[in-house]
Length: 381
Image (cartoon, rainbow, N blue to C red):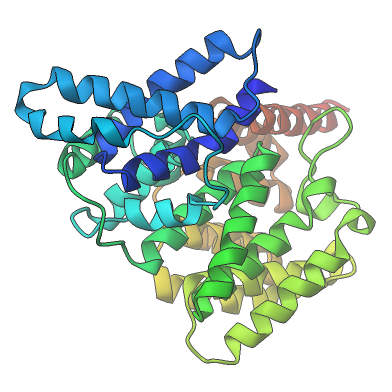
């Protein structure tokens, strides 16, 4: 319980430290010390005001570090401004901190990586997987970003596009495993949508709602993944679907298409189909064409190959897949699915097993392993 509480408080405490004058790297170091102290102390003596306690301890750690650094003696003037141990301000600073981390001195990719690590709570490995780069490369990118912003005052917030990218990746991580992360991303995107009149903010909110509406049906009672085509659509959240579709329609009417609106349109077509067999795959392929035009993303083209396989047959999907880099994440799993649809069970079983060895998480690995076993059992009959 304390771990969940600490995680929920971390962004707002970090924002308070930055506003009080700590540079980002020093604030993060001080907060980490305070979190370690909280893990040690709280099980036996949980404070009445956990947020105020963290602010006070972290600020003291920051001041101690400042005094110890001869090159930063000027910061000793801040000692008298140490906050009292009373209740901390109740304002939610998380969204503000997202904008502050998207600093103009950073490239968009570095700003996203830094924010995901410092505010979103994702590990370096998770961020590296999202960006399709080695973990060591991402670790270096995050370290460079920390060094670059060290000592910089965060009075020039970054742009909306970078913040949207961070929220999207945080949601995706939550969607694949952590319910709280996904819910927090939706909450922050709602707040952003009320503060900024921007079609892509609306598009992202619609996309999140449409995906999150299917969450209850995505896993079986034993925790195994349930593919979209096999999900019990009666378990989908129709209220969230209706809200997402309404938000999307209003955004599309403004005729300023962006990647999140296009993704939401694809999700809406899946949500609108009463059964998997009634999915409008032809229109989904058209939206993937729009999405590829906007993003030029190889992952989008990989997903498009699946849609082509559904709309025009598995061999058409395999032809689209042949034009893509085989090292793409989930490329092997897509190839396995399309070969199974084409009736080549031996090749499909082999590829499912290969894809399982490359799977980024345990649930996906188990799902692909079961697919391979299922086909091998069919072949042996």
